[in-house]
Image 1 (tube, helix red, strand yellow):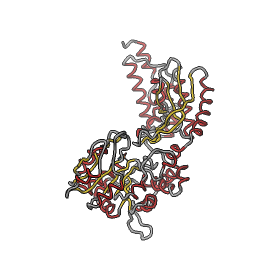
Image 2 (cartoon, protein in one colour; image 1 turned 180 degrees about the horizontal axis):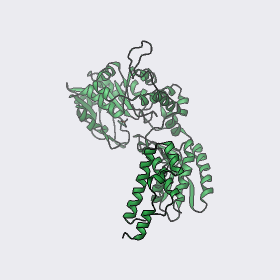
Image 3 (cartoon, helix red, strand yellow; image 1 turned 90 degrees about the vertical axis):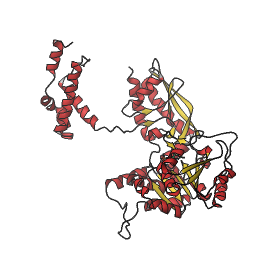
Image 4 (cartoon, helix red, strand yellow; image 1 turned 30 degrees about the horizontal axis):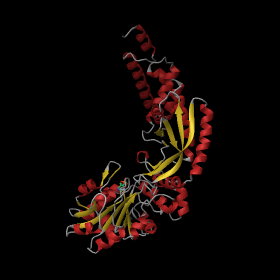
Length: 470
Ligand SMILES: *Cc1c(COP(=O)(O)O)cnc(C)c1O
């Protein structure tokens, strides 16, 4: 019903030019432009008018409150949709949350390279055109023991490029136990079809013998591919030949072996108590002709697909036109090189690369951090919410083995009369969203994945979420 009160309120709305003369709006115009702020003011007034027209509840306003809203609306237009969140899930390489966070030196390098010009494709020695791939080739060879290296946009692109160049319209032999789907969007069989390679499945889901591979070899065979099954594992009556056994047999037929490691690690992490993540150097030493892995999984750099292997094959890949379409961007390259340099000193890599630091942090050290957070939150909440420190299990993530579990420590938060689902959702709605897990009607924050520098955001977002239920 459009009654007279409605007309009174509508008349009470200030004109755009009056609103723009308010000090808050003048501030905004100094920061952005008068045209931009004027459009924001018009948008706000139109929204209030429409709400009144639709009979919606519109809170009483003053010129001050409207001017403040104009300022907030203008500021909001500059707030990126992609933004920082706090990861309290305990999954270190979380695909939804952007996988590996970068090391300080990688960030500095991105800043340097992105802000100005660089020798991206210039050979400084000759002044002639150079190759963007030259910056990381040597260090990759040194770290993995390979003859040659090439980097592309991501590992999915690496797999595609390798199959396209080395197996187009020819046969590629893969064990049935390795035809995996990773993260819902990467299926070995489908990438293979897109690349034009013909998949030849051998063995069974649980067992593939050397003789299965050997019997499948024909004059159409161009490649034998091994895929690290990453995010799942078959247990029990299982078997696969080792990589070196496979290489030995397959090479006798003059056929190369390619291994897609997925989350390949530069360091041998077993001595640090981390499952059996595939070690790139081990695959190179076992004789694989080509090995590919992701830059933003265990390596702890940015999104990239890293290919290492024998010179003859890498040269063919480099010359393929597709490489141009799949090429790595300079910011990623800057981050990747800086990250790789850290690996020259194992202790430095473990300390400086966030993913490796989190994966190797002791439970005691995580507990200490959790303890101090609990005391700070308890002091704020009193009876409003209950907090409990508990043992938990964190995961490597990033398509790594699900049984790569790490002992960890979590804070459980419960609020009387508020469900864990509701609380978890409210935490995601904060200015800096906090991603938690729900266990047994409590919201659980795993502290292994909480950066020291995120603690203030974390505490602020939790307080704001809890208080929002008042
Ligand atoms: C993750 C993964 C891929 C895809 O790598 P991206 O870098 O995400 O493109 C391919 N193969 C395996 C075995 C993987 O684990």
